[in-house]
Image (tube, rainbow, N blue to C red; front, side, top):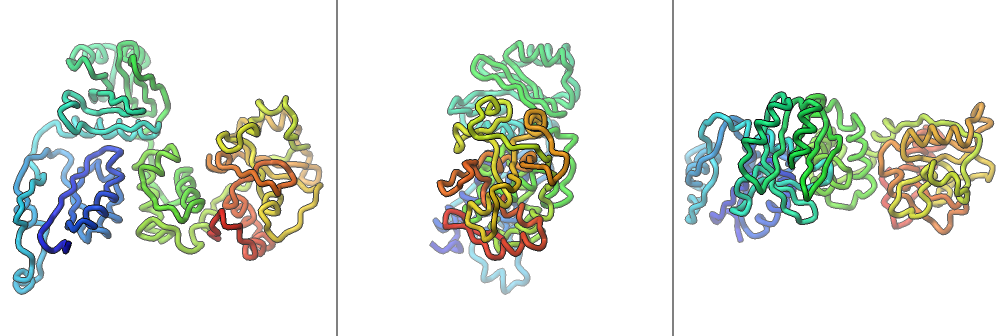
Length: 454
C-alpha cells in the first residue's frame, strides 16, 4: 500500500527497555503501508536511536519538556503542526488528512511529572544492566504499579518512590504510605543510608541508590548488586572512550553480518540500553559505522587497534593444561570452553593455529588473555615472574573486554591444546606490530567461520 494514501501511525516511546525495539515496529508498519512518526518522552530518547529512526521515517523524532504530562487530542491537530510546506502550490499537492481518526499525545503542564517519570526510568535502566526486563504498566492487570519486572515471566509489580535522601525514618514513612499490597516498594534516591537500606530490604522492599547500588528483597525475588552510578557518569568524550566503547565496537566487529538490536546487544554485554545506544550514536557520528549500525570497511578495526591495551606480565612458565592443582585458582576454564570464561591463547601462536602466514617455534613465548587482574596476580605467585623478556616463557594480561575470554575457540588443528581467542582479538594483537604484524594481517584471511574486518 502507498503510505501517502493517508494511513498514519504515531509511535509514542516511553522510558522502558522494550523501547529499544521500536525500530522493528517502524519497519513492520512501513512494510504494511503506514506512514510513521515517532514521539518520545525525554527519558524515552535514552532508549532509542533517534538519528536512525529519523532516517527511516524521514521525520525527526519529536519530544517534549519533562515537566509536562499528556492529554488526548485528534491526530489532525498534530498533523497540522508536524507537516511543513514551502508554498501554497505544495500545500495543494499534499495528501488530505487521514479519514480514520487516530489519537496522539500532546501536552498539558502539571507538577510532579518528573517525580513519576524520572525515577521509574532510572530504575528501568538499572535493572537492564543486570539483564532483568522492566517495563512500564500497559494494561489493567498492572494497576497500582509503576513498573513491572519480568524475570523469567514472573510479572512482578513494583511501586517506585523518589527521595533525595533516605534515612531510616524516611524509609519507615514510605513503607507506611505504600498502599498497594501486591506490589513491592522500590525507593530511588541520591543517597540511601546503611540503616535505611536494612529497613527496606527487611520489609519486602528495596532501593536504587544513585551512587551505584540496586537492592530488592521479596518472597519471589532477591537482588543486591552494583550498577552504574548516575551522578558520576561523565559525558562520552569519544566513540571508543571507556570500556563500554570497546565492548560495543568489538561486538560489532565480531559479528559484522548481524543486524544490531540495541536491547539484545545491551543484554549480551551486560550494559544498559541507553549506554549501548549512546556508543552507537558516537560511532555513527565518527563515521565508523553506517546509519544502520553496520560495519563497513576496516576503519573501525584500526581505530580499536589504536586503543587496544598492550601491557603484559611476563611469567617464568605457562601452566600446563593437565595441571589440576592450578585449574581452579588460575581459572583456566578448560572443562567447558564454550560456556566458561578462562585463559585464551592469542598473538603469534594463535595466529598460526588459524592459518596466518607466519612461523612459530615450539620454544617461543605463549601469550594469554586471562579473565581479570586477580588472575594475573595469582599467576605471578604460582608460576613465577620472569626476570626479563628473554627469560619469559609466557605472558598474561587481563582481557580488555569480557568477550575475549568468554568466546574462546577450540580448533582440532591447534597443536598447543589451548583454547584460542577469537580471530578478531588475535588480529588486534598482531596490529600492534606496525611493521611485520600488519604485513601478516594484509595476507591473512580467516576461514569462512569468521569475517575479516581488517
